[in-house]
Length: 575
Image (cartoon, rainbow, N blue to C red; front, side):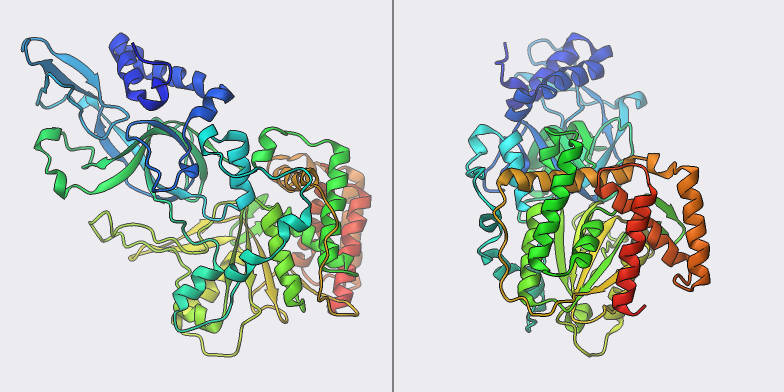
């Protein structure tokens, strides 16, 4: 009789028992059994999370785990045998059928012998295989809150943030910043990039996740939470039916696999919203004021820049057309001090769930490969893998491009290709992948913020030069509680989700529609707007301005606010 915890420590015991009980309904029985347990939050927390375990902290092979990951590469589908037979050593005429699902190898119990025979064709099926990594640009507060709200009791070793902690305690001192934002180049360019790129792959291992009976498409760079059976052993390809005894264990590669029982695609990874699916309207207004006040501490006397920075953080693509992505709002800021840069980066790491940064100079552009690449001509599985780069990010990520150290110089072919790659990312929100014999464009949705000394060499939707009468050398944040910071985090994710899922904003009333058309005609006559791209940027600003207040329908008031913002910016930039 299995113990109550056997469903986590020995899930195959439960699966084999369900198969023996009713082979015809076995798959539905397994799905219903585990789904009932997983849907119970207390039982869900008992499942070990691979995100909370380092490689040194080994989990037993064959246990149930959960894994919050990004699909970093996609392997070919794998053919596997669904069933195999064994016979007792003392009863040679008796044959017992066992399930081979959720396994890499045929397991023969003690006292039994594996029956080696060719299985019928109907016993073969396919399963999808994904190479997955921990989400590369997940910020620390997200990890901490996942441990706090969903972590195992024995893995929660970090002290939860006290409610009395304020913004200074979260952002200062800038110890981590000194080690992660060094932009000085040296002879070892790779080392410089590793220090500057939080997006680099972590020390945690990659896992091969094998998914059965998928009902929806899982694409490259998708964020998914997998729950399945973890194995850490030597395996061979699943279409081989050799017995364990015949395998040369020394020649088989070690690979960590997860046989997925249940998965969930993640539209966001903000753990605070799992307990707060909706935000009250008055809380949206308060959070909007909070975040603008923090921006104004960094950029005093420049409310225009702060407003654009807020709209940039909640932007998200809502319509795609060939070579165009509507809804994005890439932003270029210039003429800011080092102190402002450092404070802005620490603030973004504190309030955003997905954040990464790259530093571009002539030297790094000429030496670092930014295009993800994979040599599909290689037959060796270890060599035929997609190489991750700092630009391979999940949807809804935030990318800060540091251009402050850019100097004059000659770009090589690699440097020019990297510039073209960044241009496509900013303009079309696509990223090209190299597969040795061909290239493919993959759609992205990455909010790009460029910090430069002057106007960036890269194309951008909005360029703003910081304007202040005096240089900012010291930045002091107001006392804001942990609860207020969490409200800001929820606000940014919640408002951003409206942009992706809520279509009511497109149903503008006839009055506002007439107003927009008349304004467009007048602005063309006055040559305030010279092309449709400028007009579309204005429409995006109006959409974002509306959503930033928690509203779903565009009104004349929000339309006028967007116009005032853009016209004020154009006057400052002499556009």
